[in-house]
Image 1 (cartoon, helix red, strand yellow):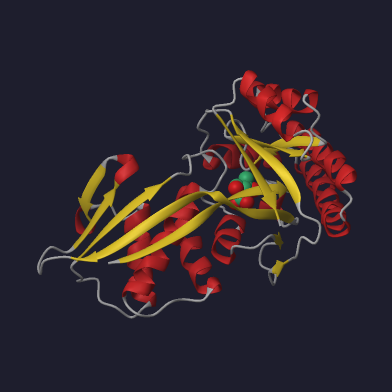
Image 2 (image 1 turned 45 degrees about the horizontal axis):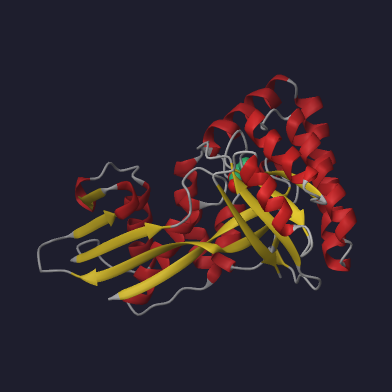
Length: 309
Ligand code: MEV
């Protein structure tokens, strides 16, 4: 039996604009994880997939060709130079809520790739895992930037520009985030598709917004590297104003953001595709409990506090 995990992720700055070549910053969130187990099975079984949270139990050969787990397993076995005719059972579970901006799809795929690679005695480098998972990400939404698979496969804070050499960076001055869930599932595909249509209708306006988000992201990296926490909070607020202009916020996200600010957060914004899913708030050891309480009172379905380091 072989077991592997993958963490969730949160985008701190630059979601959506990253699809259009601007930089974004993302960090792994180890408090939520996907898990994959590979076990040898009786001869002739084929590849059986048990997705516990989705209550699904099926054979790979019976799944539609665009089934994300089928695609992930097939691509991994090809990469490992293994035949598809394996007799294994793959059991998947995850504590990452689906369609909430925390990278559940990419984390499940990453755990599967890692577990298969280890099972067949051929552990892969992070960039190989990331490339395989990127192919699965394309099924979840057609035009992924690649940031989710990258931050999850490398398990380090990343400053990410698509199609450029990856920069992982060190957070010398750790800081605290409260991450709160609106409880509203919002597939990234829909938000990304809407932004694309709006950009096509008014490219000048949208390119300007993307540029401004890119500038904020670069400033945020400097703030993180120099421990300028107050400035970092203001940059989060500014990024949220631009996300509103992209129309990817929602009343539920806005009420959690307002609650976090009332509770004393230094900054707050949505994280990921938006419309629903999660928001993040920059807190301190002094404000974290009050902000978490305010978020719960405002209707958050869950609140995680995590240290980014
Ligand atoms: C999703 O986590 C982040 C988006 O920017 C989409 C992407 O980068 O592929 C909304």
